[in-house]
Image 1 (cartoon, one colour):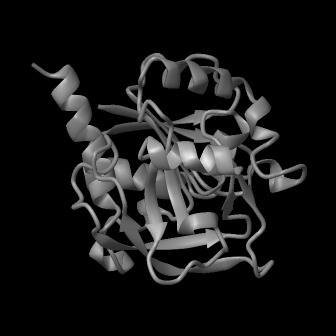
Image 2 (tube, rainbow, N blue to C red):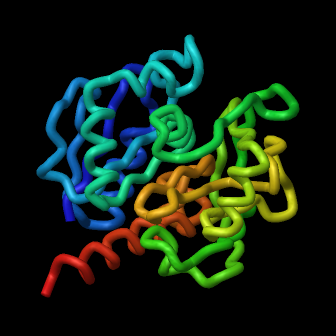
Length: 226
């Protein structure tokens, strides 16, 4: 399986994502600059965290205007897995690939620590290697991770089982319903604030994030390798 790691001016988690795929997962991966206009050679798209374009307008808003995002939307429509982490989650909401928005943390401070995350839905291509209800340890690092949507959207997320991860015990940013990660209705686009790519080896303090990437590869191989 071949992954693309998108790189915007201001991305700072692209190297972590590359390492997770190449060194821990053992799959093919390439960096792809934001002005790319063709992602057809890739099987999965990874939108990493950071501060794309300095977050000067609104987190993810300027990145959404980049050439590559038109291709990301085409990949999502074609059913390819698309993962957006932290700033990547913000970009996916700006692009309309996921509902809702990420607001300033409730305490108005940047937060960086390992938190407990509960797997609410393990029946997705991103979470099949986890147990339902499993509590995992994943780092966060964000200032705008407070997930918000209107009541109608929230009802749809619940009805369609699109809430994939919630904060367990401690909600660090004030997200409604403790939401930490959601998928689109089709189930091939995941956005999450915690950083699974920073939890892929015990040396990092946790390898709980590796199952997410293994889940993607397992699903892809079952669909493409006879």
